[in-house]
Amino acid sequence: MADLEVKPVVLTGSDVRLEPMTEDHIAGLAEMGVGQSFWDFMLYGNINSAHDMKKWVLDILSRADKGTDLPFVAVHLASQRIAGATRYLNIAPRDRGLEIGGTWYGPEFQRTVVNTECKYLLLQHAFEALGCIRVQLKTDLRNERSQKAIERIGAVKEGVLRNHMILPDGRYRHSVFYSILDSEWPKVKRRLEELLHR
Image 1 (tube, one colour):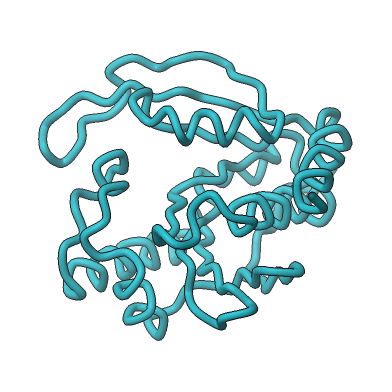
Image 2: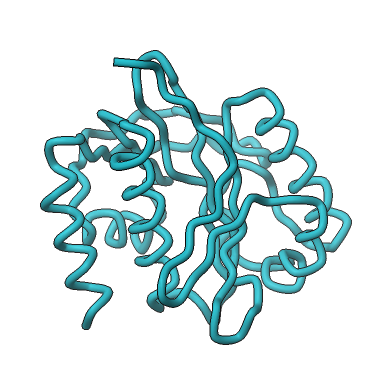
């Protein structure tokens, strides 16, 4: 089977549109993400100003230029506001795998349909359009909310990589890894559809 070919694409659901991230999104992302506590669990340091957000977006776009990442901005359709960001990363074309991560949403969009539908759209595209055989997700061991959200959709916990990364403040991060295989996607898809139609 051919290698993965991951290209920018717009993915639209009932409540959310995922569109390729550009510099034009910086202001909307800053409005939603500056000063939020979730950056403490992420690998980029705290984002405390519009300037920090611009640096973050430019860094993520530079990864896209290298072909390792494909970043998206999540737009909440009813309000037409940017809800947050997510991306494909660690894209492994030959091994037909990738990771979904770097995900964050503004407080008003957390614990709403936004995250569920974004995961549904990204996983559906990965397995059904790109032909992935594995999609992985990882989170900080301290981030119990994220672990529960990943487990809720049916991803399989694979284990913890201890001292996996050094965060910008010097702390060592233990990362919890999860995956979904192509053979598991039909069951996960049904689970996500049930959650979306509640």
